[in-house]
Amino acid sequence: MILTNCACCAAPLPPLAAKQCSRCKTRYCGLACQKKHWEDGGHDKLCKKIRKGGGAEQYYAEKKCAEAVAVAVKACVTDTKGQTCYICTEAVHRSTKEGLVRGCACGDRHGVNHGNSGIAHVSCLAEQVKILFAEAEENSLGCNALNARWQQWYLCSLCEQQYHGVVRCALGWVCAGGRTWAGRRLMRLGYLQ
Image (cartoon, rainbow, N blue to C red; front, side, top):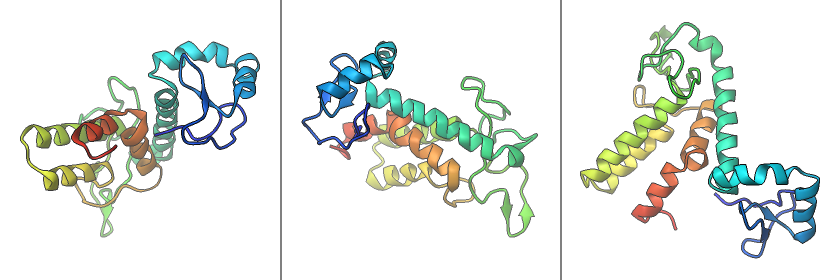
């Protein structure tokens, strides 16, 4: 993921020639915007935090990921009330403290309610994909197995239907940017340049 707009004025940035903060790599359209953002935009207070968070792209992706997961949990609160995650069997995730989501067709197929099928934490769904993908990679199962396991980012393993709405958005942020495991893994395997 590449930040494509100036952090100060939001103007589109050229792909390679953008000015950036030497400490945290936040990108700007020019020196004037960088100075203004430092003095008036609060960058002086965030710069060290952004650097510790892995740089501008990682920091903002993590922030966007957390926002997307919170929106998904809030949107699913009625469907998941009194339920537990089918993966970890907890109502609230023990380490992330996030609530539950339901974003596939498991809960109501052909007019029949299937209890807590498909109810999970976004973190549990992401961890499940990581484990499946790592297993395929370790055992050299080949591209077909890797592709099938990669589909778990957007396809429920129980009902085999695509996640939708805010749940799909949250999983997309976890996969692509928020927790960059997927991007690093694909780059190492040569799928991404």
